[in-house]
Length: 385
Image (cartoon, rainbow, N blue to C red; front, side):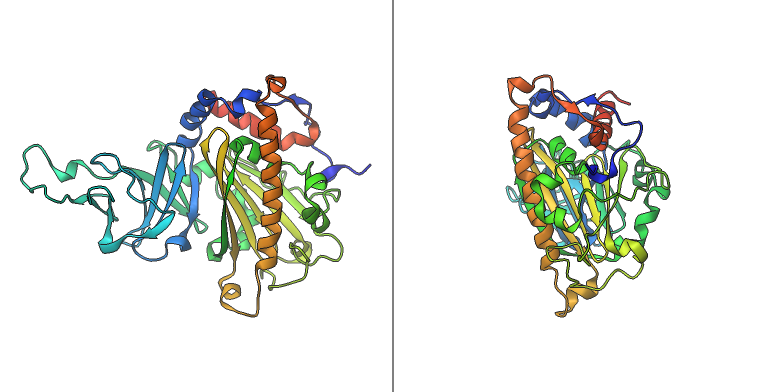
């Protein structure tokens, strides 16, 4: 029997999973929000989504909502999506544009400047009203950073810089050749998955299931082929985990439904890597697949213990998107099909995890060694390690 992904590292052993309740219990979920999500750098989107002054996107996380907006100063700013008057959500759409350089609350029309969140408009309130000073009621600012064209936000004002948190630059050296900062969004899809965020991430971390539920993926990148590991070449960090590269099957020249080239190769992806797809993860919520002519990634946004909004992005070279000579549908269809197969599997696991029969959890075999790393990350974060 050929081993899936070429086997596992020598240190991989049989371990227990997290208990079933950790995937549905409200108290456990709230602890994760406090100790993981509100302290982590979160990938909110791409800079090209808010290319013009006043453009904004919103991202919702459990009870929280974030606004990322392109300021008049050209920088990207992030704020809590909460009006300081009576607490209304300010931006109610997934994306939009702030007119007159202000974000207006739809309830009472209070207006906040996009550059600093300052409250600059309060209709029918005199400037000299006793006990009220607009300067005391700006939007709550969040930490924000841009790296490789990705927008990152953090609720924790005491959090380390994004670079320190990620462990740059050594960790990402193999991926710089994909010039992520020069790519552009060619397609985006939002999925509502009725499963705990950890189950979706755990599913993405292993390919033991690929032969069972992913016929399209398995035809293109057979999971029985050896995987090309880079763990020993480039160190991982607390949140960055490499998953190496998988070879394309014979007869496939590209990562897609048919394997037929629809776009030119990335110029700096050469040799054997031109026929491979590299994977890496950024905990708690990012999965990235780097093909030789496009990049796919998704982010997870937990809303409830058993509901996760998942945002998928397909990135291409701008010249590809600007030219009718090239297509992107094969790449989009490939990951859309694969994603939906994964969502169905995750929702089935969610139901099983809620059973009394799974109260003590299950078992992680050596093939699940990357899932075991994720389990340790979650446990360490909840224990303050």
